[in-house]
Amino acid sequence: MKIDTLMPALEPNAVAARAQELEAAGYDCAWTFEATNDAFFPLAFAAAATKRIEIGTNIAVAFARTPFSMAQTAWDLQKYSNGRLRLGLGTQVRAHIERRFSAAFDHPAARVTDYIRCVRAIWDTFQNDARPNYDGPFYRFKMINPFFNPGPIEHPNIPIYLAGVNPRMCRAAGEVADGFHVHPMHSVSYLNEVVRPALDEGAKTRGKSVSDLELYAPVFVITGDTPDESAAMEASVRRQISFYASTPSYGALLRHHGFNDLGKQLNGLMREGKLDEMAKIVPDGLIEAVSIICPPAEVGRRLRERYDGVLDRVSLYMAMSGDSTFNRWNELIAAVHAA
Image (cartoon, rainbow, N blue to C red):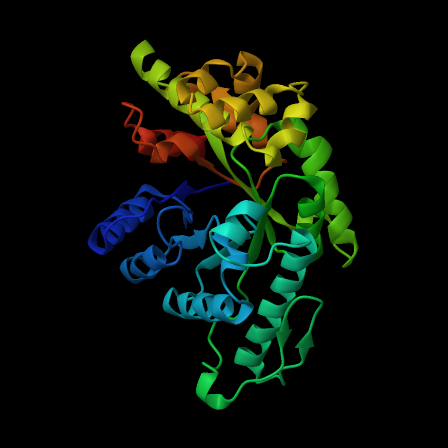
């Protein structure tokens, strides 16, 4: 099992220093995400400052960029990092794609499948000078000239990960992706009974299986050296889970665990601006299903016990949070490797 980490948006010099710290600490990959800042910009500075650690997006919003724009950005980062990029894509949700990004969202699973195939066709032209001839249901790549072709690179095989929660998107990842970004709000039973079977179903369409995909997930961990540290971390996890669970995208997970009405209750509180009330109604049973709760000395063993054979790489979600007073994350990572 590989041990990764999430890297928040920082100033360029701070990104470089942080990336070097993560590499020295033994992390396998540093993943950025797209929220208040662009997901790709920090990776350029991280790549320039390091030699070994992989870099990736978890996630970059696919539909916010054209396939050619995405292909070009990834190609540059793969070249500058000497082959260390892992391109993680996600679809976001309809409201944000249509009203924030001014882009199309119809048939998102089919659209992102076509998108990834188009990106790979563009890379084929970059690397092999293949004639542009991609004509899919949503995207086309039919024209280029040498002025716009960056040409071949030493490591042209860029792994593409797709993020998802519900079975249809999982199946799409199985059809076209190299890896899958599991959402932080997950449980092992949901992975084994919903996610992995859907990935396998999609993978079989191209003669593969779920074992051919690499699964990565940030994991909620509630720990601490004192009761106050543990309580602060639990409060932060509760807030995050209440936010995720308030949107319809995560209804399948809630129903899987028998919390059929929780999403509507949280959504109602969200609309009323009652954020503190949201965290209070998250059931303990849901917290226990989607989090590892234990003393620091047991984190490594518990991660291994829960995810060996289920996930290929993990990170500790709360290590990135500024809400906790716990600051011994690098020690926990060493313990995970030792376990």
